[in-house]
Amino acid sequence: MDPIVKPVSDDPLDNVTELRPRELRPDTDLEPRSDLDAVAEIARAHVELVAEIEKRIIGQRKVIDQLLIALFARGHCLFVGVPGLAKTLLISTLAEALNLSFQRIQFTPDLMPADITGTEVLEEDHVTGRRAFRFIKGPVFGNLVLADEINRTPPKTQAALLQSMQEYKVTAGGHTHDLPLPFLVFATQNPIEQEGTYPLPEAQLDRFMFQVDVGYPTADEEEQIARQQASDYRPDLRRVLSPQRIIELQELVRRVPVADHVVKYAVALARATRPGPHAPQFIKDYVGWGAGPRASQFLVLAGKSRAILDGRFAVSLDDIAALARPTLQHRLILNYRAEAEGQRAGDLIDRLLGTVEP
Image (cartoon, rainbow, N blue to C red; front, side, top):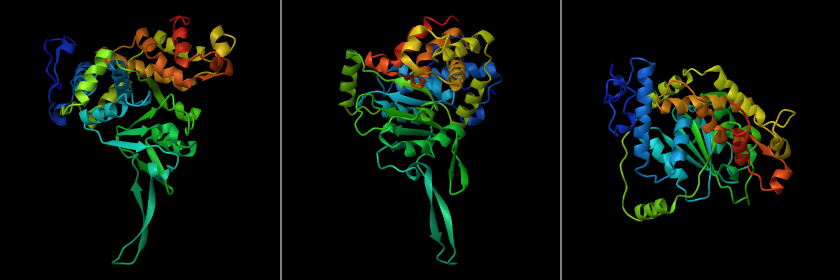
């Protein structure tokens, strides 16, 4: 069958950026002839997705790119930024463009685990008089789950997401329930307001592929935002991919080959964050604990996704380096000296890139 969008030249990878958003055909027409055709397809879908998202989101292109890389790599994201930067709007817009179910959970100090996963209730059949337990699904049963202000709830409730994020399952009342696929958790966190918050446990942080730093827009972008949001401009979005096709393309990402020297570079970066005899001096000075083995796995997987979204069926060293900061920074535990001197984990990762040789 034909690919989703006919290329503008004989080579399916030519002129990818010249394509324009358009409605896609039904899922029955989405089977590519080969993995290389699928690479061209996902590259075109990337262009279309960005175009649809930018109908509502002004600026934040780097954030959008990292979000899409995580999406196709099946990685969860932690968005860190002050309020009012359109984090929630970005995620809900992505869900709409991809025809995915969207669930938003507002994390508060009194939120209970069952409020996230669901609970069993005792019901009585009025005809037979028999009683039985029935599981009522919680808001975690969605394709894209927004955990808004995740650090405002105690660790006991935060832990309710651990099984879901790792195994795509929920266990309640002795029964295990499968979550709908694709399944992704996008959490937000305010970096400046610490009153009434609970730091995320290391096991929870390690489940997130990326920590995405959401910064302020430029002056021109902020003018456009003020002008647009103060008007009645509400653009409709085209659906770019179906849920089933997203799952297939996520499988494609995992089939991308990786050269040995690229894997070694990813592992070297992760290992260099751990204080030890072979670590750089600034890591020994400021880091208490470094990134674990999951970090190097995520680096390789994210590199695959970045390559595919760029229309390439091979991972380069540049892919790994470009994603080192969002992949590694939330996995570093800084010591008291780092806090006293105002050192940030992301800045240490940037310095590390200049130290670790490919």
